[in-house]
Image (cartoon, rainbow, N blue to C red):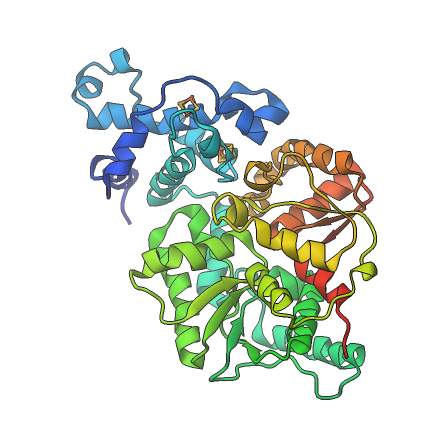
Length: 430
Ligand code: SF4
Ligand code: SF4
């Protein structure tokens, strides 16, 4: 076992031996204009100055100055350079894990383009190197590493759930041959799941199964590797993120599937669609797309017949940060909603300027920050209330979970649905 000093040394190497020039540039760029403050739901909801994004940057910059600059090494007081001691480490855990959803809104608004989210992830990587990831979040990663899914769902339990969902599908589409295919090789689509689906939201699996049935798709689920999430992205532990990404890559190769379709999960989509080729250092020989993009494709190609009068209530959309601000998937979910529902209203702000729901960045796993997570959620609750909508749609299971808790806490009286549920409700089976 390495002692703490050795771990601190390894953590400091992340700053002293940066992988690229970006780190030093962004650590040295903040001009303390304060414009990022109003971007952050933590600051907006609490007015606590500790939560201003620039203060989070300053935590890491001050350590950088102390150990990686001549002035900071010999005259730390002159540059407000700080030792990596217990006090600053505790503050880093509280600020970088407990008060940031990695939503990226501050980065978008920074007056000079400091990539604040990237710096928070660097700080998380330092804490990860020191073994100081909150145990609640790390246990989610450990479950994925040990069992293949972050909720440690036994395979038999998954198969039971899928079996009764398949029976329901047969009834719903009135076809005894309708199925939820498992582990079928040489197929067009390997579809993934967020483990929250078999555990808490099986209706979203039914919805996608109905959509695949109506689109006459050749698809399968895998019972050995279906988890779309990668919580090591949130702990910034690259070694563990690589192991998790490699498994889905291997299952795609094993089943010889042409397309990997990612379930409605913001960070899972980001981790496998955009980050995994970097983690695994290779181009993928298969296509990776989000289910939002797949639904767009089905509708635009006429593969689904929809009756939008089946969704008449007023619907609003919560944009998941990882899909929209980070992934650029903005218009697709609006296109789908406008084809599947007759009454749609935007919340304000929306799109790339939308506020985070408060559940990202691993917050839903870190129960020690529950009170804070639900406090900052008042921003989202207000946004929803102002629309007057009766249903809130979000193509992300993390957001869905947080939105359900927001609905309960603030007594909004709204339904929370995935995009696929809205589409499935509108499908006409011929
Ligand atoms: S990424 Fe989001 S939550 Fe984190 S500091 Fe920036 S605005 Fe706040
Ligand atoms: S907006 Fe950018 S430059 Fe201004 S205080 Fe925030 S991080 Fe620093």
